[in-house]
Image 1 (tube, rainbow over the protein chains, first blue to last red):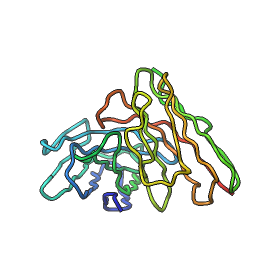
Image 2 (image 1 turned 60 degrees about the vertical axis):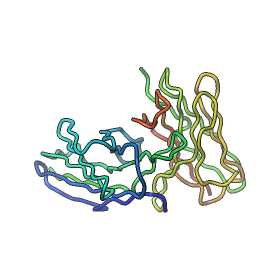
Image 3 (image 1 turned 135 degrees about the vertical axis):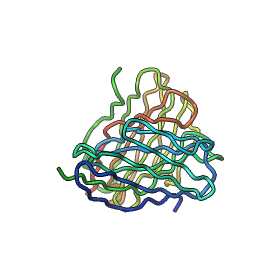
Length: 113
Length: 113
């Protein structure tokens, strides 16, 4: 499969706890992005990190990228019930002819109030 | 600005029929891409159009086709439907040529009976 892998596949935490999701990919990339999907709906872009960046923050989100290990992690701090969703990483491969992102299989996050 | 609009939201077809799905991107966005999402295969890239030209195509049979009009609206067509074509079909638009920050529609849920 061309797709990257994410772990864990499912994560259940209490409100206020931190959630960490990991993503591994297979080829050299231009950037890596994280998206959120609420049940049966479209995806919402969360954050983008370029191949020459190692860490990026946006509000309660922290993303790291290790190109030598071809891996990334997404940390959501102080989780809320509203963060319950599926989270996907997506890579823009360096030899991409255009317009194509490779998505991971996703992590299903459940935040219990 | 209005978001990405996909119609119809739900569709039920029988094997052998054909179907056309529509996508209206955000005003000013010239790139439109299509993804198929299934529980087993996850999110898979179908094709992408930029200024009416198909820039990239995923590994799908020729039964899957698409086009983009001069106003950037896009359609995808699936002919001779198979049971395995049942999926959520997502359209995404982007303002630029580069693969950064896709804006997704809510999708069309296609069921093939």
